[in-house]
Length: 240
Image (cartoon, rainbow, N blue to C red; front, side):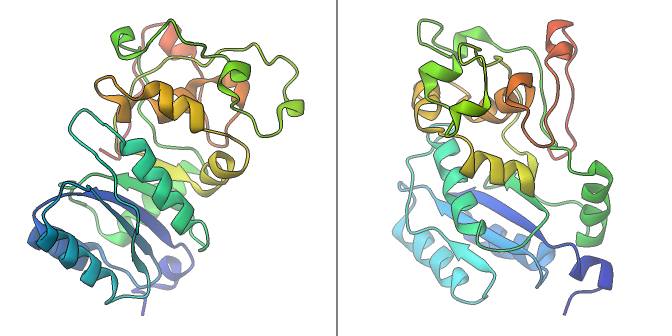
């Protein structure tokens, strides 16, 4: 049973990309576990077979813990991390929750579930995404980054100026995304090409969410403004 009525009424979901140290991950789940929440794991395909089996067995123990059948070739440069997170979004989409927290293998939650719930409620639907000036060497500027060139919008008729380009931005991989933001990413955006164009550079898991967050013309739910980028002001996040 949930510890409090407030927690029962405010489920949270987690997506975590994992590749090693099973015991740590099991203890982390034991600490953060709440029956009303949802947990999704995505495996690095290079992980040891024993580790993969342990994680998959863990997913069989709880009705709200899921392990993706698809594995991804992730690494410290952020390679395929965005694909892995998107995989968990698709799995978790079928369930009811208020925020999705994106985590990496060794991220440890330092708040109780009640405290996390209180913090997320204070966001009032805003996404917790770090946004700062981009490191342009992480982008291939010779590519087309316009909405039209990226075939970004599933319903392009909703935008009158398709030649608008994405705002380049940088952030961090762990983020907290509102449910409407995840709905928007899955149902309104076609991320196929932008994900492909981000691959091949360093730190690409730190780019997609800040770009979506800061591109004002997209008007993403819980989004932000690029004015701080233009002024050289970094907007920090608290998820990390």
